[in-house]
Image 1: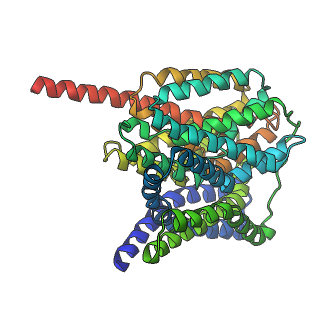
Image 2: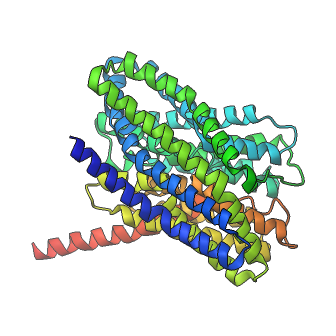
Image 3: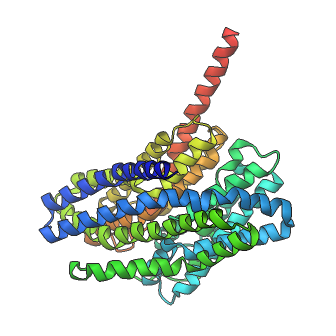
Length: 490
């Protein structure tokens, strides 16, 4: 048992090395070549990378033992031992608590308050948490009613198109970025596995309906924040607190403490569920609790490394590259976008979950590559936007129109996968790598305003959806070709 656990940890450690180290090398080389990085700063980045590797090494096994393994038992308990009213109430409360506890949501709320006048961080937290829980519930209700995914998504985007007509260009960009608020280290894995567990427990649920839960939750947040922005004017400038290397240790500890404090509501609900609903005792309870503890520590280490250390280095690279011209700036942005897919834990969890659910029919590497290509395209387009201005409104309307059209041509299996891929790609690393890079370029560019950079995370959501839909069309043709070949041979 101990040997197997050690081998499992080593496997996750190796995966973490391959995920984090390439980005670290690129970021370090760029700072050394183009920036004014000293030895102390290089050492800080190196230590932060090591801490992130440790965080990922314990996060993934903890996620499996503490969250993924108990969920099938939880969904079976909710379906067989409780009324539908209690089931729906529990899903709503669970969705609210995990979103309210998600560190990424709190970062979004803080950035939002710095951008929007007369706004409250607590109000934003509640709006995002309520909308995410409501649309997570709608995803579960959809399973019971057996509503097709395409109809659900089409209806939600029609509502968004109507609301977007009342938003200014800047407000639309901020609203689009909000769609990534609830797609973090805890929410994406939990929502994805929860939806899959419910799908397995209910009769008559098709394979393609097992996906799309985090995508629907992400669209729900987009709708709620869009409505909020209709009545809330934006300020004319964006300010963000800077972190100096002298205070890095203090900021690191403060960030870790804030993350652990934020997760406290989820921890309380988790303990209540384990003890009261699932009645786990002895070894099983200890295993679950240790797994959950690994998740908490892993999230704190990953999130703190990303927000406290990586952000200043990314901003430093962006400032240095801006003076080198648009070609190099766009090229580096594209590389950052592609590598972010491998760095993002939510992408890894989603991709491996898809591979497992489909019994290896679709490789997790293929999903990660598709998301990486989507993130690379996002960075290419939005950094170019800093030099050659174009309308965010019409760009996204065209993008979403194309996505909705392709939704009816791609394989049904890829509809939910595509929208989950969009939400997973817009996770923690998008907020601490891609958005700061673009916002820094926007601050420096005379052709852009401080609000011009907003919308990039919205692009992070849409481009992976588009790439995965195209992947689904290719997959559909290959399946049809294989079936036709088998019939001709038979």
